[in-house]
Amino acid sequence: MLRADGITVAYGRQRVLRGADLEVVPGVVTGLAGPSGCGKSTLARVLALMLRPDAGSLSMDGTEIHRWRHRAARDLRTRVALIFQQPRLAVDPRLTLREIAEEPFHATGRPVEDLTDDVGLTPELLTRRPHEVSDGQLQRACVARALALKPRYVICDEMTTMLDASTQAHLVARLETYRKETGAGILAITHDEELLTRWTEPSGGPTVRMS
Amino acid sequence: MTSSLTVHDLSVRFHLPGATVHAVSEASFEVRQGECLALVGESGCGKSVMAHALMGLLPGNATVSGSAWLRTEGAQPLDLIAAPEKVLARTVRGRRIGLVPQSPASHLTPVRTARAQLTEALRELGSQASADELAGRAGLDPAQLDRYPHQLSGGMAQRVVNAIALAGDPWLIVADEPTSGLDRPLVEATMAELRRLADDGRAVLLITHDLRAAEQVADHIAVMYASRVVSHAPAAEFFAGPRHPYAAGLLEALPSRSFVPISGRPPELTDLPSGCAFRPRCDRSTAACSDLPKAGPVACHHPLEHHVAR
Ligand SMILES: Nc1ncnc2c1ncn2[C@@H]1O[C@H](COP(=O)(O)OP(=O)(O)O)[C@@H](O)[C@H]1O
Ligand code: SF4
Ligand SMILES: [Mg+2]
Image 1 (tube, rainbow over the protein chains, first blue to last red):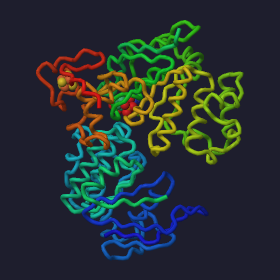
Image 2: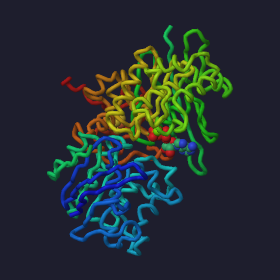
Image 3: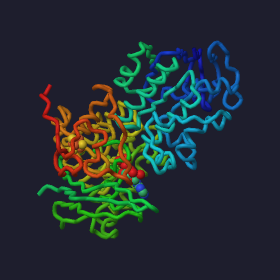
Image 4: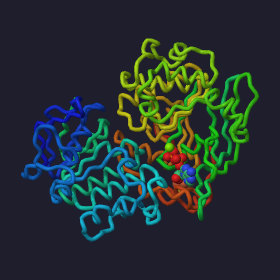
């Protein structure tokens, strides 16, 4: 279980999170809802070990987290993946889609596996760079990248807000397949109540509401 | 006479080394004063290129054919495709057609008040109107103009960018993905604003990937797939049951419906299949579909029957 207790984060003098608690349980989809600006994305970054909170504690499968970002143990860092709302801001514009999807293998020195087929990218698309593809195509590559190292937890932060209905349904279905295959815990962050219901219902996961 | 925009057989090609992108192919539609037309379709299908073609804002590697007649009350009709850049810059952009940008937050300068930004837009267009009048046009309380962008709610910020788009009193508003990345309450506020502009007698061309947003505001829905307009219908008819198989699949993919994606993926615009471009993904396709279906309200050889209204 990925468990956050009393997480507090301030940017400068502005406090964006005050004592937030959340549990992401393996095998189910946990929903996280709340209006824009309430700190969902900040909490997502704490959970993905990308942002050290000012107060509170985080534990992963019973291990207390003390280090964040590049100082976190690699084994813990790769156990959780984060997918962002805006794929364009989340990739290196100089890389091809294939390089983006395969980045985690190179970063960890693990043998490269082909994982792009099941997110729906053709070999030709994989040779293109971000500015030559649509948001939907780029997000598919980001989903492939997120699942590359078989994370036990996947945090999806408004992953489909920029995408059309069919691409949205496709990527959510991909994550559901992954969850069922691996027993991973998914955190679905969205302000879209209809999407939240459809996504959390099959696994019977809870929805946490922030305000 | 009501003012209108009539697009006929509009095509846009981009020439890349070794490939040609078919970004818009033989698109035809019309928007009139008092109406909102939503152009929907998945990302990359050619919606923004279409908008840029109408505004004369395409890059140098593009070629355009077809026509887009802008008929403005009290003015000579103008073909936006044939018109020289000078004419578009002086008489069209900002004056007859206003562009609502993608995200209000990133469009406003943080260190200047709303009033300063409106005044500048008015000055650039040489308009005699005052910032207060302009605020009224966009449904803003003039008292709020002295705020800085960070002091405005999302809905208010949206009205400020709408006011800027309205500075030259254009009768046609083109809004390209105005809600991208906004949360639901803000999407709804933005759509309500666009509806108000149409009800005020302007014409609104809304470009979006968000069917629910389109449902809230549009009188007509045009669906683009792989560079073509494949379906064009009154909104009520469309949401009761689209007749084009792609349009039906897109609607069914919504979480409020069956949440099932359309199988397969859209074709490359550099390498379109002959005939109907939806053929590889369509469960109704037959041999007939290797001929291009005729453009029209339903560009399909085997349209679905009208669903019974629920
Ligand atoms: N300057 C350009 N050169 C080459 N191809 C382009 C250019 N601009 C857009 N395209 C291509 O035109 C197609 C339509 O793009 P676009 O209109 O932006 O799609 P949408 O707005 O529907 O998401 C895409 O395949 C895109 O890659
Ligand atoms: S023309 Fe044929 S392939 Fe195309 S949408 Fe209609 S039935 Fe399907
Ligand atoms: Mg676009």
